[in-house]
Amino acid sequence: ERCRRRVPGGGVCRFHGGAAVQVERRREARLVVAAARTMYSEDFAEREPGEVLLAAVRDVDAIVQQIKRQVERREELTGTDLLALGDWLDRAAKLSKAALDAGVQERQVRLAEQQGQLLAAAGVAFIARVVSGLALDAAAEPLIRREFAVMLRELSASQPAVLEGRSR
Image (cartoon, rainbow, N blue to C red; front, top):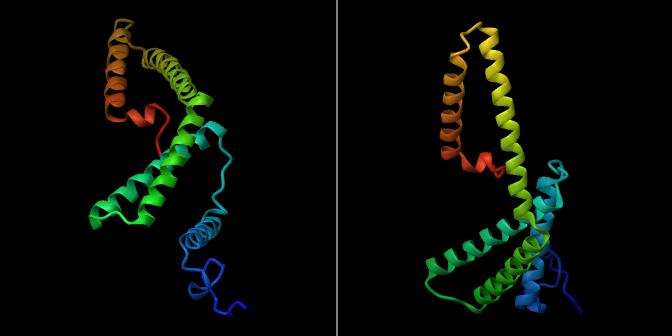
């Protein structure tokens, strides 16, 4: 007969089987899911499947890196660490393969190219408006275009994630 002790995350208490590794992992997973639902229920925003998949790959990689840092700090590898690391590496491999199979990276490149073309077209239209609006000499337009191109190169060198559509 189970005891009546309340255990966060549900399941049996530590004395009646709750100390088993697989039981603890399931309990921790339930707690994480419950916390995520509570924290982010209002912030839910619909996203493209490719974007969700890529975000999942990054998240899994961050978890794997965190497990590695924890092991390095303790300078020992426990059985639990090894199981967790193996599970998360498997997830990383499966998600990465799914992302590659779905062609997420190719879509990102196409999107970045489209955004670049749109930005260039907007820049040219803006320059034409500035030249005509300020009644500048037509000789000023090539100089303005050149300066605009320099500005875009500087921006892309300092903010590559923003221009590639990967800002967080």
